[in-house]
Image 1: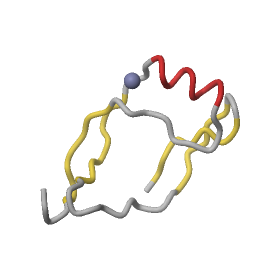
Image 2: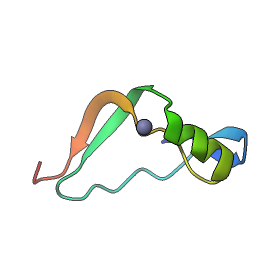
Image 3: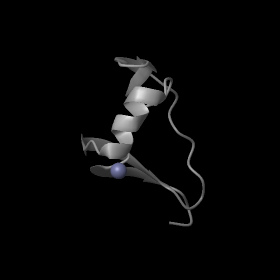
Amino acid sequence: MRAAVLEELGRFAIKEVPDPVLDRDEVLIKVKYCGICGSDLHIYKETAGVAPGHEYSGDIVDMGPDV
Ligand SMILES: [Zn+2]
């Protein structure tokens, strides 16, 4: 899958990353929209090597057997 990864402080790149492996009680969401909040601003200024964005919505495309 593709992700916007903060490769270094202040610079994003669209990259192919491994598909997540679901636990039994998790769902996989294909993100359609993602917001930006104060936590993301701190990540943008202080943390490289991550794909920020924890406030999103989308479609459930897979789920573990206990969901
Ligand atoms: Zn937030």
